Image (tube, rainbow, N blue to C red; front, top):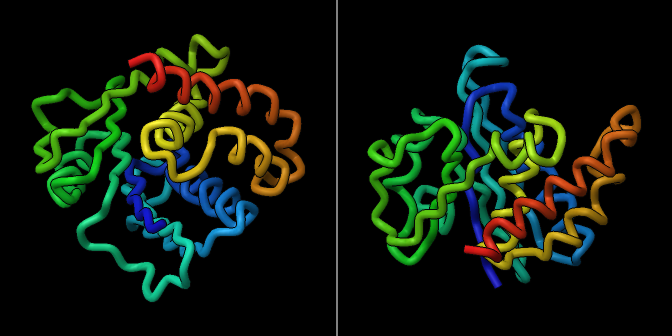
Length: 181
């Protein structure tokens, strides 16, 4: 098994947390992992992306030019990363912020996830990243949503452990959204 993904958006959307959560969950599932964050010059509001590789074999490099998957949380990320996804890959798009006309992908598998609306439904509009991570797990099969849920206490700083129940709900809601498509 080999899977790579680029998570991209602007600072403050939880892009790095999505990558870190997938990485921690993958390690706990016995997978080989690389995680490479890339920050723009500004933090909150600036561009941010990270690449995660999940494999059954050792990973030679964390650098991925043509990913199997891209998760794009804003328009600039959609314009930059969606066209790079392999033809047989997939793109997950934050439909709350990205108009489909800005998604020019080679792949036919593009999934539009209404992150803000689903996160608001769960009870916290700031959990769009967890909605998207659950959607990614369901759509790709890279890990089961419950493997990511199980990794929450290990991936989140102790001071955020009170948020584990609502993060769990958001991850599961994102997975259900894709399962119901």
